[in-house]
Image (cartoon, rainbow, N blue to C red):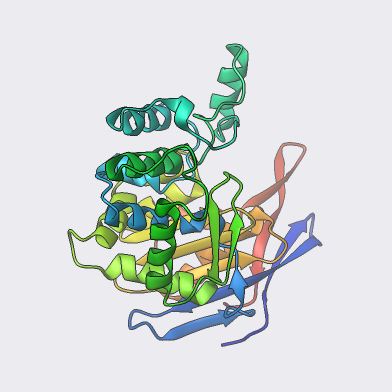
Length: 318
């Protein structure tokens, strides 16, 4: 094991054009440390990789969601039609509509869908913002408990206090700092080791419990946690038993149903290095080795004039 960051190279026409540094923390099926790159004990910003943990906190507080809609509550969705229909279903059960959402307005992440919205004369909306599933679930949790919905994003709100307590329990750490995520929700900083510990707890939880319900929903409905063409969905389809959630600024977290778990952080926040490092970590742990779908994700091509002229690659063994 090495505490030095892992190096990711962007190669074009045979030349190393750019270099990214990655922090990686992984444990084996027994929970023993298997991979260390970088200062994985320092406070880190997990961004949307925190969503499955937030969903557990909401279930513990009385939220009743399962299947696709629970996966959507954990998502950074692409804004495809089925995502939007699901968000509206969560809100409708709570007696609310999209006007209750307090996430910022944005276009769908799915490019084709965004183009369709613009061609139809539409524009950015709260419903199509990638975190609207989480926000709808937060609002529904408030309604179940009789909590105010007007300030559900305030860190002192009962909802956010419940989520923070869940995060601290599952990570085994006190929250190092509280910030504001891109969607406006409180962002709880924990170490990479702590986030991996939490994901492992979800994957190994007893069937039917809140933690396991989240893990099972994500694994059964990967398109609902991201999108039909997103790498997270491809990873979960290619490696049965895998639960993975990406976050902004180059963060990734995953757990396997046998107890393997890991977190990845690209130092400069560039997302293009995130998936190759995640795939390399999976392979270092002996997971998904025969999945052909992982080949392109492991070394995504770089294009020039519409044809491949290079790749993004992890340098050396994980």
